[in-house]
Image (cartoon, rainbow, N blue to C red; front, side):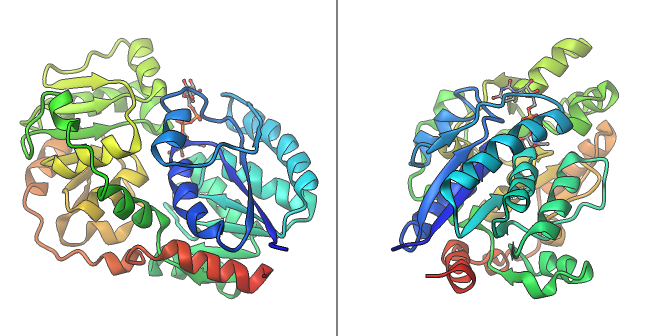
Length: 356
Ligand code: UD1
């Protein structure tokens, strides 16, 4: 009989990562998929399951939105019960969200083995909930599955070398698969021409919850010299309204977009401006220059050769970075993110540690 693994998902990027891994995983294991309900709007959740052909969750916890403490507590209780019901050979958590932390704690409480996909990333900024979540998950895990050599070094520096395996990044696997199924109508739908617009996203709490930072980003977007398409996360839409911040005239806001449409728009953009970790990488995978609206990145490879530039939220720095970013010089080697074979390496590492 195949061993069971229980995968915890809850947010958009986790649906992407889990879908890329599920295809390979289900060849060797029986997968129980648990959705915490951290993301629940159709655009952020159900639309991704459809877009990615991800099997519907076996268990849904419907925890909804709340702060770091109460949200993870609610998830943890439901996850401990789900893990005890399924009795998996391993629990798999992805990335660094509150669902990741809750899954890691629940596995420890239920006495199940834990595998952390996208292990070893560090921003050095403990004010981000994501940094707390990823450190806790890495240290609780029996198996740390690292996407890059830099992540392996971070794990080794924290004494976790023995449980770490370099696998590559499942987001590259997902990107390469989806690119083959590109959406030809995506640009026309938004009235955009290839190479003549910028694509932007903003959703990090550190940016949305501080009006001065959000104002800086809006002023910076006004200076990039291109029309800017800005799909708005509900958190950002609420923050703009709450702080009375108007978007500049060159910025067109839309509802959140699906995965394939986002990739098509990223691919054809002249420039990406974002505070998302996933988008920084996807821009790099696709060869689109990126300006990161933060002071640090977990993906230092993307900075080489000027493909990604850290600009924070100061309008002048955003303007200067956007101008410089239009002509990156370095080579990009997708092998540094596993070349599209991360899922098979993760399955092999899991099979070695937990059978069959
Ligand atoms: C979460 C992750 C972040 C990840 C992002 C991907 C944490 C700490 N953050 O951020 O690392 O990059 O997902 O998108 O786990 N909301 C809705 N509908 C939804 C979900 C959320 O309206 O379906 C609104 C609510 O007002 C909620 C706010 O968005 O309070 C924030 O949601 P939350 O899940 O806490 O964090 P994200 O910003 O989505």
